[in-house]
Each structure stands twice: as structure tokens, then as C-alpha cells.
Length: 419
Image 1 (cartoon, rainbow, N blue to C red):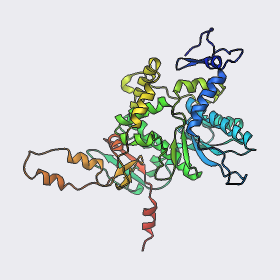
Image 2 (image 1 turned 90 degrees about the horizontal axis):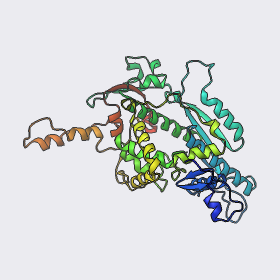
Image 3 (image 1 turned 60 degrees about the vertical axis):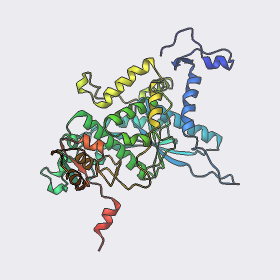
Image 4 (image 1 turned 45 degrees about the vertical axis):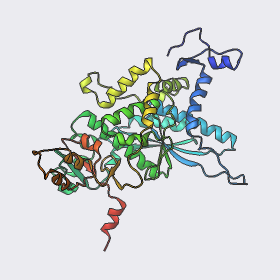
């Protein structure tokens, strides 16, 4: 929000600072000077990371090893704002604890830019090089090309029409394996833009989690603001992925099966506040401009585009709408209890109940014959399919034919050597 010439910082006025500085930002109907606004946002971020402080061995002055955590960097306003907040926190910890910090930070950027030449440099690489210079000895930066997801190996061919899925190795495919060396080729068989965007987001998340495992990180920090979390809650619901919301918004930092937590330090910060924060601290030069603008025509927009536009329009007059959506969604409980047996979806990796996969459920609720007394026994006789697809991926891949890298589990690898 714009600031008038007569507005003064209300917080400095309350603390009786003399002279009272001019307000530079108005957020949540409150005028802030630069110092108070930076302190205001950093306080919200640090409350979410209160456990990551410098700890010492009992009765000794020897500091314990710092926790290794990863920042999922998108080079947008929110993730850059979080990066600046985290580096400021690390610098303060080192100043107070003789060079020691409670955070060992590594920032990972998944580069979706694909080039067929080896001479051309990715646009994000130049920005990452400047960030490495700016945050030397504070944070490590890694760039992961999206093509890393297509590591050499077997593929699964998903021919998804009327719940019909075939599984082949790469040598059995009609196409050669070289056709799947780029993500764009892999996604070419997906039916619409929403489904392609959904699968691309899945690829991005899996690469980030893989990088976290390779770096030995115990947690992943996501730069999603409360605005973004509200958008995710609504989009996941509309895509049939509502079971992911409890884990996404868990206040207890519930760990996934792989032992890596998801933390959202900006879950109390609005997206426009991150834009103002980045502008005030001269970090705007590191924002990576989008190469493909959002479509203007409604029918060309994805589900994420539509919901993002809706939240952006509503937040202008009702800034608290995002917090309301997130608080309401946070009350949802996970359907996966410790007493249930579950498996992972082949595509997105989310949990699926082993007892009944979505395609089996869809068959049971569909009636294709007149009613008779034997109908109940016919439904009960339906054999559950073990395709291991969650409902969201089942919907996204409907009517599509595309290949997906086969990821063998540890058990499958060991079974090959069993005598």
C-alpha cells in the first residue's frame, strides 16, 4: 500500500522515538518505517524457527553441531525474502556465539530451463553466482537441473484411459528411451495445462527432497507465504489432493517417512509484505523474471492461475482472508493413522491406503447393470488393483499416455539378489 507524506511510523511513535521516522510501508493498515518493518517480518519468521539456535553441551562451553537444513529457493520474492532473513539470523548468531551458528544452510534451486547446447548458460546461474558472492561463508548454493529427474534407467508407460495402466520397461516402449531425455518431451503426452503444471510441481518437489537426502538435511524450508499456503489449500482440494493438506499445514512439523520435515517460516507473512521487504533491502535485483507470463484468457489458465488471481483480488480489500483459509484448513486431520497400512503413489509419492486404491473405489461406486440380489456379491468380488496411484494423479493423468521414470525401492533392489 502506498504511503502518504504525512504518515509516521506508528511503532516508533508508541515507543517514543525522537524524532519519529517517516513511514515507508503500510501493511495491514499500519504504517511502518524501514527498521520497524524489517524487525516485524523477521520476528514472524524467527518464531517458526525458534528451535534452531546455538546449543551447548551440558556443563561445557562446547557448542553442538549446527542443524543442517535446506532452503527451497525459487528466486521469487518470497524465497529471496526468506533467504535474507535466514542469513541475517545466522550472522547475528555468529556474532553472539563467537563464530558459531545453530543453522547450517544450503539453498537449492531447481532450474526448469532446458538448453540443447552446452555453451549457453542458464539464466538462473548468473543470479546464483551473485548470491554466492553476497552470502559468502554464510550459505551454500546448489543448482539442480530439472533433467536430473530423468536419470538413466527403466521407464513406466502410463496409458491412462478408463483406468487402464500398462507397465513396460524402457526397452519395450514403442518410442526409444532417448525421447524421454527432456521434461518437455515427458510432459508432451499429458492432456492439459493444469495436469502438466501439477506433474511439473511434483517433479520439482521430488528433486528438492532428493537433494535434501543427498546433503543430509533434516528439514526443508519453503518460502511459501500465508497467501501461497491459502492458494495451495484451495488448489489441492480442487485437484483431488486434499489428503496432503494436513501434512502441508501441520503446526507440529510432522515428519515424513523419509525423516525430513517441511517447515514454512513465512506462514504468517503476506506475499505483498515479502515484495516490500525485498525492495527495501535491495534484493530485487536477484528476482528471476518469469519467461512465460500468465495467460490472460480464462480458458487458458491452470487451476493454480485461477486461484492465485482470486486470492490476489480478494486480499486487496480483505488482507486476512488468506489467514482464515489457512486456519480453517489446518483443522483437517490426516486420514492415515498408524494402524493403517499404506504405500506411496508412483508419481507424486503421497500416501495411498493399501487396502483400497482410488481406481478400485471408483469401480465399486459405479453401477453398470440393473439391480438384482447378487449385486452386493458382485461388488465384493471386485479384485483391488495395485497400481499405486493416488486420486489426484489418477485424475491428472486421465486420458494421457506418457512415460515416468521407474524408481526401484530398496526392497525391490534386494529382492533381485535373493537366492
